[in-house]
Length: 292
Picture (cartoon, rainbow, N blue to C red):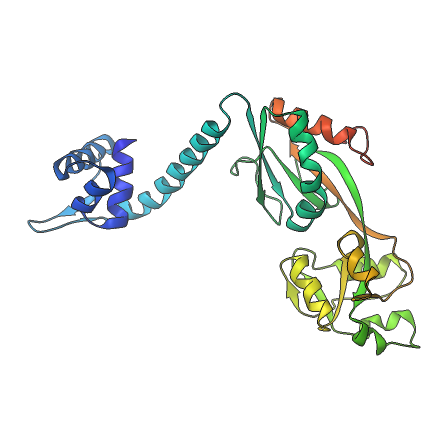
């Protein structure tokens, strides 16, 4: 590990002297560690001449991979220091749902299970649990994430909305005229408008329009009159009440998917996650048993 840290520092600084300063050791100690690593790997990592030393192209690529592993170890060590007596629960969340639904409920879980430290990170799409260090994730849509267990959290209802000024242009028109407006899209839900149209009995194929990576930015675009947005009702209750956004469809209970907590089937039981799933089951409005 000491030799790997020396290699990582040398790749960043390009200097044995600077590496020594960074690690708090002498220049000769750095040189010894780099030689130890070469001997251990049985391959040449450096191009040396009388005045300089530099990494081979293969060694540069090796450094990039090693740095990721060192970062993972450092993060794991930090989390262990933060909670040496309990366990870590690493959850990948969707940003809007995490902020509006999950975060307000988490204090109750923490109060019930102070031994568990919950770490939240953002992931917008399904990933491989084998390569990402998560114990579970928030998933939206259908039960289409392979090899995971599902705990349904909430059905999502969506409604098309626009600014009052843009909505006024449709006054007296049939509701289906909503498709005549510029349509705003979330890039993780490219077929949302088509699914919604099918649910209300309308025909729509391949609508085009501006793309956004998060609901927050898409809501702001709708507020500024840039187009019609298909937004979950739980995210815009205040904007609708204050009439800063106007619903463009009379029915607001149209669902195109649900939120789930998912975790890998093949992993053995993990107490912090088991506690979390049990807590989810007891939360108001959540189904009482997971669907695997």
